[in-house]
Image (cartoon, rainbow, N blue to C red; front, side, top):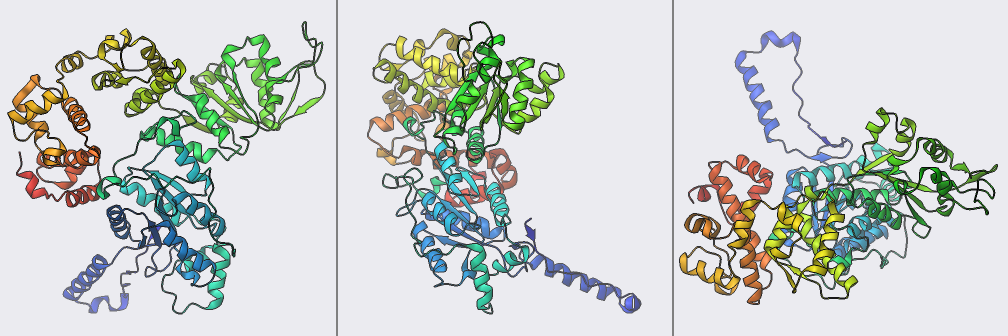
Length: 640
């Protein structure tokens, strides 16, 4: 594991001379020792290598400011950081090592790379590195944190996948793990490989490291893989200070699996799918009804080596109990009344592929015993059959029930539960990831419009706010049905509050209705605020910024007559877009962060650690934000 190497050793006590050392000399020695300890720089090494040989990180990102922030973070964490503006430059260095034009001692211990960059994208780079340097770990970071990015990252051999925005402490912890994850490598050899000063390294040692770290290949140029490469030609320019914190939204048509989500809960699901896709291991998917369990099972199959083989889905709750065994295992001719021919069951139909058993908790107890045999040795008998049938099937099961409770009640076999519960993948309910509702709504509204052969409808911001506040007990399936209902029933191109289904309006909080009824038009809002106070929200063509105290003045001067800050922000954005402004997110985000930073520092009395906790940041993140926004704790504390 990662070690913080400390060369300081306290002088051992010499019992024979203790009486000769004066009290003042003892205090002086302790002071010198403490000073040496305090002055020592903590360095991260690999497998307890000497402290003068810290681990090396190659950092690849085309964003200069983000690169600087990350480099400072990892250097503070005890790493030697080598930065690259493009993956192409890092590939050139690695290729020189591959062709033995450079010493193998120049190899890093870990690489952290972005995906979307000019000339060469991070996925193609990772794929090439994995082919030629199979033990060199790569961590991929991206703002395009959808399911495809996660799966493609792991398919290229990445050690880990970091969706932006990520916590800097989590990133450091991930890099530590990657540094010490060196498969099939002796500890002593890898410790030698981590040394950066190789002036005295022999040629034999260099060759030994080369043999361990990479596979020589004269045709070293990376091959582009259409299924993995991210299109870099349409990459938009982003301002540096926003790239680390803002996550790009993924269009609906970029998610062929239909699984959409930018929330942290869904990023965990994406990581799990990426890691499990290439494994034949049994997976148990749990979650409430309507959370998308079959979509996840289908994604696991589509991105697995079995993707060209059948994917058979079977709902246990939808089949009569007396027909389940015949449905699963098939039957021989004459096995029972009406069995006029031999019939293959679902297991045989899914041979070589994946069998998805939905609502496994509803399977009859007698059938569970037969399923247990299939999971144990891959064999079963057809109903009425005498010869065993051998199959190679990956089992993915799903349930909305608590199987542990069913085991206690004697309704589910305990041994079968442990057979199925190899890897459990829980899916979050929609009410715990409300930030995904806007993207899901756009996707379902677009898909419903295609089904109805009509133009896609847009939701008024106030109506979308009500949908985000709704509880959604039916989860994503209920949201999909509501979008289909709105496409058919709502009049006009814009869905207003009155167009929403009754169940959404009944569950709407009382203050939400009051706020939405008081919403001003975009032009009235901009005009009224400009006349009433100078610290209001202005469009970018007037002053290209949002004043710091606009939200506070809205609340204190206008009170309940003005909309909430969410409404104010929505109206400002609509007005800015109507006036032809672009990049409004990059304009609003720094000012939004400035307001929250000021409020947190004022509330904490200027104490950075307390303010960072209030914002949910680490102290380093808060300090860097203050630098990026050209703020200081002393200045902000005087602002009210």
